[in-house]
Amino acid sequence: MNLYENIIKNNNHTETPSPYVPVMGTVERVTRVTEHERLFVIAPSNKELLNYCPGQFYMVGLPGYGEAPISITSGPGQEKEFEFCIRAVGNVTNALHRLRKGDTVFIRGPFGTGFNLEEMKGKDILFVAGGIGIVPMRSLIKAVLNDTKSYGRLSLIYGSRNPDDILYKEEFEEWKAKGLDMRLTVDKPHPTWKGNVGVVTTLIPKIEVDPARTIGVIIGPPVMYKFVILSFRDKKITDDKIFVSLERRMKCGVGKCGHCQINSSYVCQEGPVYRLKDLHSLPEAI
Ligand SMILES: Cc1cc2nc3c(=O)[nH]c(=O)nc-3n(C[C@H](O)[C@H](O)[C@H](O)COP(=O)(O)OP(=O)(O)OC[C@H]3O[C@@H](n4cnc5c(N)ncnc54)[C@H](O)[C@@H]3O)c2cc1C
Ligand code: FES
Image 1 (tube, rainbow, N blue to C red):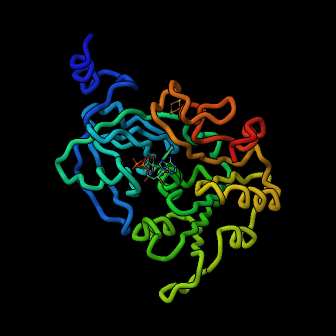
Image 2: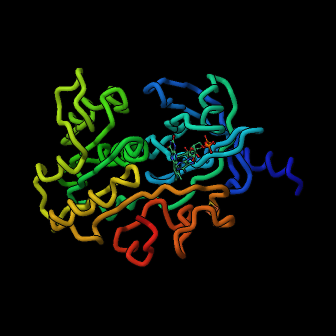
């Protein structure tokens, strides 16, 4: 089969797509979230791509620019379209920011491990997100908030550099109404901010935790992990109940190029979501 035939096959609604060949997606909506991030609603031509779970990612690309790994930010169970929130930092992401309604984007995936929702059922969950870590966390939060009776107490600590960088503000009232205990913080004092000031770890001691029934989830910038893990351990949450999502440079997404490798693990396949206990054998992970 030549490349052209493969592309046609991959864009067929009924075929399981090849992870090597992009599927076309139509940009349905673009919303400015902050100065640096935009939310893209995209309808893939092959609806099989919508079978994802929170924590997974896609390779999102444009001809002439390349591809970038981007996390799913919409909740699972979508039938027509999914959402990506993209920060413009360089070549591919700036080109993606120039897309408008009706434009075409090329997508492969979903890739990697997601969060195991079955394991989380019946437990309290303490989510800790820093910066753009709220992007993949939102997919998990939406999944859990759509089925709150299956979970125990749900708490989110979300830290941002300053109030203008806080993502998804307009959704917070709905999240709280569904039962999420939300604690926000910004790194430094700001004239418009009346809430907590300081890094996310300043809020962890204020959350009541029953370590026997709590799962901790951490997604954020690399520097955050070590300190949040120490705070979780102070709360006696054990490493088998802590989940982290790691970010590494990626090219193929399918375990072939080695760009994402940490010790013996390919993050694109065995990650990006890891159980902290499993990272003990990967000293370069955190
Ligand atoms: C699993 C995974 C999920 C991700 N999810 C999202 C998401 O949902 N939204 C989003 O906006 N971004 C996400 N990223 C980061 C995104 O992939 C990078 O910002 C993107 O690849 C940069 O590509 P570029 O061509 O625009 O930038 P480049 O021109 O390649 O680089 C621009 C700058 O960004 C730095 N950079 C490039 N890639 C990375 C990286 N992986 N980590 C840290 N710095 C990098 C470079 O060093 C350079 O300083 C994710 C990354 C991974 C690995
Ligand atoms: S991105 Fe190529 S091996 Fe993981």
